[in-house]
Length: 302
Image (cartoon, rainbow, N blue to C red; front, side, top):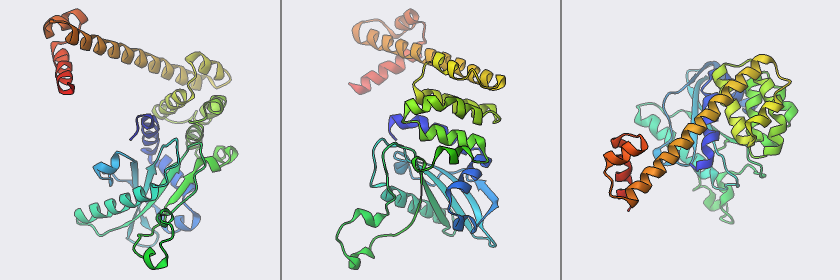
């Protein structure tokens, strides 16, 4: 998965790990005729991944399960997250790989294959149209189309949903999160929406609030001072949560910056001098094992 996608993946995993948020999300993105076929009273998250190690490099999965309405058969509802700055026409191949990987794992676990409903959540700024696997093949004719596996998936494109409709959702924290995702690539718009996003999220668990605050702060590229200026009209408790989260985030950034400088200094001393690991460790106030590990990394890279 590309480096720049990690913040999106981390944020979505954090919010979708909350079963109520996930349930409310599936209720708004699944078509009504599909919802009628599902018994959400049996809704639960599955602890294991149905994505192979190779597929994990290109997509992440959040997987829930429920029974079909009026029966014992189970349906697995999968949330597949793609975060790209460009349109990837090959997504139907990735989704197909996910579906078959999941079913193979079910069989390997001694289960009967159960239906998997994949959902592609897209929040990029470029226009992206729904496409199936057959759309990747031109002029092959109906005689050969039968050799292609055909399946549908839910394409949830946040860019096509009006802000007013998102804000009107019953689950206000979900509304705040979807707005933050929708404008994560449009920093000017996101900055102006920060008060609205934080006001919507005001009654949620503090850990989830913090995840949203950090995600929004990082996506907006605003300074701490700019964020604080935007939240002056928010309730006192919400402002305190924002300020405490930003203080922690800024301090964490300073610490990470210090660690990066220390590692760079250790690498330079290893490359440019005859000092022992113990001497370098003493000079830079780190452990000899830390220096030794970096020396081994440099040896492997050379």
